[in-house]
Length: 393
Picture 1 (cartoon, rainbow, N blue to C red):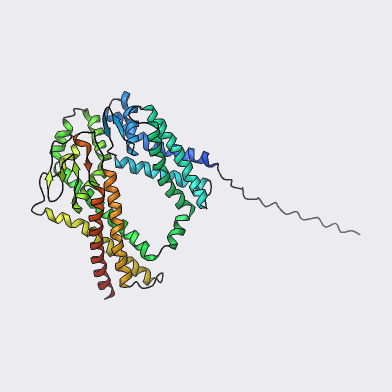
Picture 2: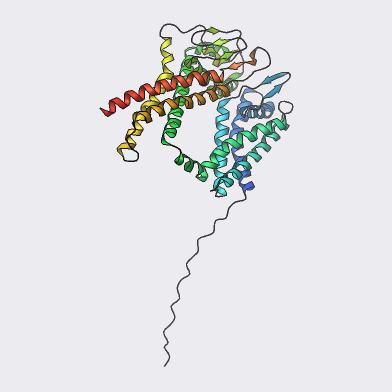
C-alpha cells in the first residue's frame, strides 16, 4: 500500500530587494539644487533686510555669486571682496552634494567618483550661469558658470572621493611622517586663524561705541541695522584672516598705499563699515607685543599634540616608538603645510572694492604663507622637543 505521508512545504524565503543605482544626472540635480537653495535663501533674506524687498532678489543673487568668487561689475567699478562666511556655507553644501551623489550611484572606483563630482559641477555651473543671466550686467553668465563649475568640482570631488573610500585608501599608503605633518600643520593653521578671530573680535568689542555710531549713520531702522550687523558677520572670516596676518607679521592693506601691521600703521579714509572700527591707529606698544606670540603658541600647541598622539599610539601598540628624527621631521614639515593653508586663507580674504583707492584690500598671500611657515615650524619643533623629553622622563 502506497505511503500517504503528506509533503512538507517550506515557506518561501523573501529575497532582499535589489538596490539599483540612481541615474547620476538625476542624483546630481537633486542634491546640487538642494545645496544651492540652502546657501542662497539666507542671502536672499539678508538682502531683504539691508535693501528693499523689491530689490532683494537682484542684490541677493549678486551677493550669492560674489560668495562663490564671481567678480561683480558695478558700473565701471569691480567688486571682488568675497564674503568668506558665505563661501564656507556654500562649499560645505556642495561637498555634501558630492557625498550624496556618490552614495546614490554607489561610487567605489576613481571613475565613478569623478563622474559624481563632474555631474555636480555641471549642474552647479548651470545654476551659476542662470543666476548671472538674471542679474546682468553685474556678472557674465560664462564667467559665473566657470567659477561655479571650478568651485563645485573641487569641493564635490573631495566629498565624492571621501565617500567612495578612495581618500582613506590613499591616506593609508602615505608615510606616517607625511600624515603627521599634514595633520599638525592643519591644526596649527586653524589655531592661528582662531587666534586671529579672537583678537579681531576683542578689537571690535573694545571699539563698540565707534562701531555703533557708524551703524547709526545709515538710518536703516531696527531691521536694517540687524541686516547690516549680519552683513558684517558674513565678512567675519575675512577679518580673522586679516588679523592672523597682523599677528604673523606681514599685516594687510585697506586701500592702495596703506599698511596695517604690528610695526607700522598707515591708513587713509576708510569705508563706513562698523567692523573697521577695530583697526589699530598706531604700531603695537605696551603689552601689545605679547599678542605676536600667539602664532608661535599655535605651532607649539600643534607640536605638543603631535608628540602626545604618537606616544599614545605607540603605547597602544598601533605604531612603533617614534624616534627623534621622525617627530622633529614631522614638526618641521608642518610649517610649510600650515603656511600654505594660511597663504590660501589670506589670498581668499582679500579683493577689490572698486577700481580706485580700494582696489587693494587684504593681506599678501605669499608673504603670510612664508612667515607663517617659519613661525609654525619653529613653535612645533620647540614644543615637540620639550614634550618628547618630558614624557620620556
